[in-house]
Length: 168
Image (cartoon, rainbow, N blue to C red; front, side, top):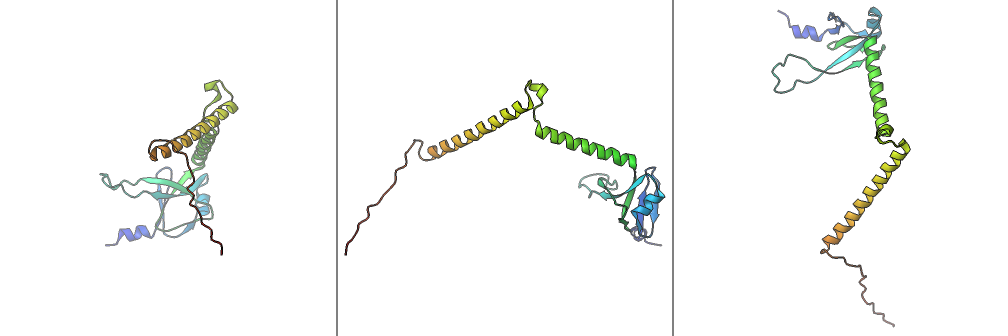
């Protein structure tokens, strides 16, 4: 009777998009795997730790799939997945669109069509609102210090002690 877990730890697993699984018992470079499977990239599967309280502890959930460079070496004991070039390009396009959308929202929080004003006018209005809010904060801070001093306005007066001079 052998120890199955020891055999699995001494192998690397490559999962194909079709569901086929290859086991290799030696280290291999990602470029070699890509040569054998043209049109595919090799990715490392990074599993999430199990969530306490979940009924099905045998189901593995993945946080992300990390693409490997062709010069990277696949290591024994790890699981890898082949991903088609089309899938990679689809994800890269989606990330690029999301990044552009975020940048656009940060630069133009209110679109011109919604207000009937140009972007420059909207930006100037936003700046004025921010300055007014800052002034209000400063004014409130001044009022709170007056209230803390007894609820009435006091003017500051220097307290000078008389200095006596002696002549020798």
